Structures are given as structure tokens and as C-alpha cells.
Amino acid sequence: MPPVAERAEVVVVGGGVIGLAVALELSAAGRSVRVMERAQPGSGASHGNGGLLTPSHSLPLTQPGMVRRVLGWMLRDDAPIYVRSRFDLGFLSWGLRFARHCNAGAMQNALRGRAALLELSRSLFDVWVERLSLAIEYETVGLMEVYATEQGRDQAQDAHALLAEHGIRSEAFTRAALLQREPALRDDLCAGQWYPSDAHLRPDTLVNELVRCARASGVRVDGDTLVTGIDTERGRVSGVRAGQEFVSCDQLVLCAGAWSPPLGRALGLKLPIQPGKGYSITSARPSICPSVPLLLKEANMAVTPWASGLRLGGTMEFDGLDSTLRRSRLDALRSGAARFLQQPLGEDPVEWCGFRPMTPDELPLIGPSPSFPNAIIATGHGMMGVSMATGTAQLVREILTDAPPSVDPAPYAPQRFG
Ligand SMILES: Cc1cc2nc3c(=O)[nH]c(=O)nc-3n(C[C@H](O)[C@H](O)[C@H](O)COP(=O)(O)OP(=O)(O)OC[C@H]3O[C@@H](n4cnc5c(N)ncnc54)[C@H](O)[C@@H]3O)c2cc1C
Image (cartoon, rainbow, N blue to C red; front, side, top):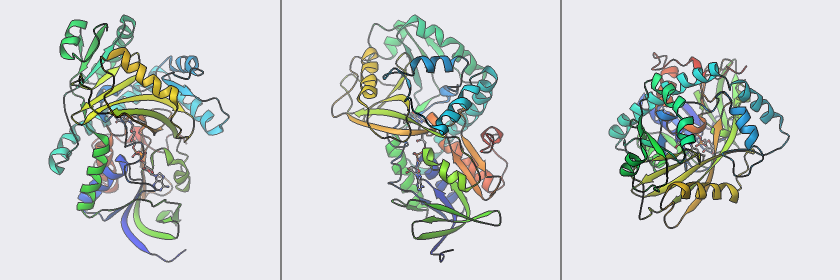
């Protein structure tokens, strides 16, 4: 073993929204924490996403009939979910697991687990914003789902009913009421569904603010620090390696998003995570700008308005960790927005892509490694990492300090896939 150069009680691997929230929470619980991030903190998936905090998205993708839909989309370059045809055993095995979860029982299970964490996080965001004075353009104004067609509206009815069973209320808007509520929409749409308890924030400023607060509370946040190995000794993690450096620790939290599987293997876990690439386009505010976040149903995309700009985001592409910005995907966002909005974008658009850490059952992986109990996994948040960040941080703190958990951690057990 190389000489011990550094020491921290807790090392957090990965400085995205999950790693930073966990670091802040553990620091508030009195631990000395170090975050090791291979690039700039907050530059992964947590940077250019929609920033929506959405209990309304508790329903997972793993729904009956989803496999047929994805197969139908597979070869369409502009499809909402695009799978590049390639031979990759890891992806094939992930895809089979995903297919096995597309049934009513597994969907209900995922819905329960997602709703619990989403609602906990949603209420904790109110507390964090207040307590830490986070300047993140946080607004609790709800979210409007918008349907261009009667077919789109009718297909969504079952989802509203399922969500209502879990206490996530919504209200139907006729076309006239929709246009009155949101005049930035085009006038040839069909209807809307209003989710009053959703919120939104600006995710790039959120991660900057989390770094600021973490550093102010004594957390060491290191960018440009690639963790290359995890050392173990007698059934416990003893420290991590970053090139020539070795940092010993009492506890480790793995929050490396879509890049987690190789480090998971060092902890005795096969983490079934595939990168689900998504795109966003961010501009200045257009002169006719929506006043609330919108989910454009038939276009499968979201629109987030802030005082500082407007973001279009969406699409899901399974093609490994290739960060090429594909024109067809970005064009699909632009044309989708043009179908619903009078002015789809403002000036100075900036294009971006990021990798969602997708699990095959649409539930995150949160909990200790059975082989190395002083290592906690906190990753695999898929399309909901911002929405679940504060709840995840609280749950990790409770696991790590043996406190009673705020939500049942069983659905998130990282070893549930064997
Ligand atoms: C287009 C798009 C829109 C989205 N919209 C929303 C939304 O509206 N609401 C929502 O809740 N979620 C949304 N998401 C999902 C959300 O962005 C992710 O779930 C979330 O950012 C995941 O956070 P994370 O910290 O796990 O991952 P990341 O932000 O990717 O952070 C992981 C970090 O680990 C680092 N890392 C990896 N390996 C190592 C290593 N070996 N050593 C050191 N560091 C390492 C990486 O560099 C990275 O910074 C969206 C995603 C996309 C792509």
C-alpha cells in the first residue's frame, strides 16, 4: 500500500448533485468530508438538466407495453427513446432486465419507491433553500402537462389516476383554461393537466451553490481528481486512490452517476447502470416566455423558464458514454417546442448533453455494500436525480449514522439485482 497522504472521515466519490448534497448533509452531521470529482464539480448530468422537482414524475418508464413502444422507435433517429444498434453485452443484459420490469406489479413497486423519495426530497428542498439561503431561482409554482391532441390527453388519464392513489394530485384544464393560464402556448392545442405541488430551480446554479455551502461548512471539494481505485482490508474500505494519491477514510459514499459501475465492482457489486443520454438547449428568455414549467406530452420533452433564461430538455439515447451532440436529437427538441410554443427559444442558444444514470427498474441504488458495509452507494437516479437529491442525502446520513430512516430504504437496496 502506498504511504497515507491524506485522511478524511468520509470520502464522497463524484461531485454531481447527489455527491454534493450528500457531502453537505454529512458535514452538517459533524463528519469531516472530502469530495473527489474527476472533472469540475457539477459538470456531469447535474449541469444542463431541466431542474424540475417532480413528484408528478413518480410513474416509472417501466410500464406495461413500453417494450413494444421502444422496439417501434428503435430505428427512428428522432424517437423519444433511441437505442443505437450495437453489440454490447452489458446493454443487452440491462435491456432484458428493463423488459422484465415492464409489468403492472413492478411498475407499482417502482411507483411507490419513487413517490416516497420524490415527496421527501420535494419537502426538504423548501427547508434547504431557506436554511442555506440558496440563490437557485427556486419556484414552487407547479408544472403543466400539455397535450396537443385528444389522443395524447386520453392516453395520460390512467397515469393521473395512479398518481392520485399515491397522493399526487392534479387538475384537468380545458383548452380555454390552459391558454388563459399559459398564454405563451400556441392556440391549436388540446388540453392540460396541472400538477400544483411540483417545483423547479436552475440546476447549474444549484450545484455551484452546493459547492459554495459545502466549502463554507468545511468540506474539501476537489475537482480534476479521478478516483482510480478503492482499497479494502478485512471486509472494509480503507481508502481511495486518485493517481499517486491515497486518501484513507472510515466511510465511502459512491456517487459517480453514470460512471459508477467500475467502482461498484471494487465494492463487490454489479451495478446495472446504463448512461441514458439526454440533450438540452438553453437560451435567453424569449419575448413570449412561459410562466410555469411545461411538459409537452406528445413531444416527450420539458420546458423550464427562469428569470435568467429558458431551457428545452429531453430525449433518451442509449449509446454508451459518447458525448457527440447529434443534430437529429437537438432538432427534435426544437421542432417539439415549436409544435407547442409561440416562441420556442430566445437568443444565444447553448446546446448540451448529459448522461442520466439509468437502472432497469427506474429506482435509484441507495444503501450499503453487503461486502463492505462502510461503503454506501448513492447513484442510479436516472431521470430524477435533482428531484431526489435532498431525500437521498438525508437517507445516506441516516444509514451512515444508524438513525431511523425517513423512508423505507428496501426498494433502493443496491444488491437487489444480485
Ligand atoms: C436532458 C436531461 C434533463 C434532465 N432533467 C431533469 C429534471 O428536470 N429533474 C431531475 O430531477 N433530473 C433531471 N435529469 C436527471 C439528472 O440530471 C440526473 O439524475 C442527476 O444529475 C444525476 O446526478 P449525479 O450526481 O448522480 O450524476 P452526475 O451529475 O453525472 O455526477 C456524477 C459525477 O461523478 C464524477 N465521477 C465519475 N467517475 C468518477 C471517478 N472515478 N472519480 C471522481 N469523479 C467521478 C463525474 O465526473 C460526475 O461529475 C435530467 C437529465 C438530463 C440528461
